[in-house]
Length: 79
Image (cartoon, rainbow, N blue to C red; front, side, top):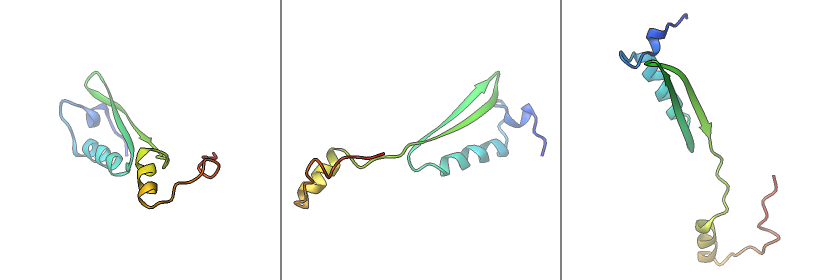
């Protein structure tokens, strides 16, 4: 389907634009959705995904509560 600049106007927001933004938001467990606007027109919707690694203070607290503190050799992250 051919889309015009009017389909992405920020002056008269159409359901198709809202739908694309909602779809981008529904895809994110962690991350961000960036909406770029130029001259009252949405020119780009960027989705960024963040992958969380389980190495932080909350993990240490959880392990301490379970009395399972890993030694340093076992706790290394290999990518």
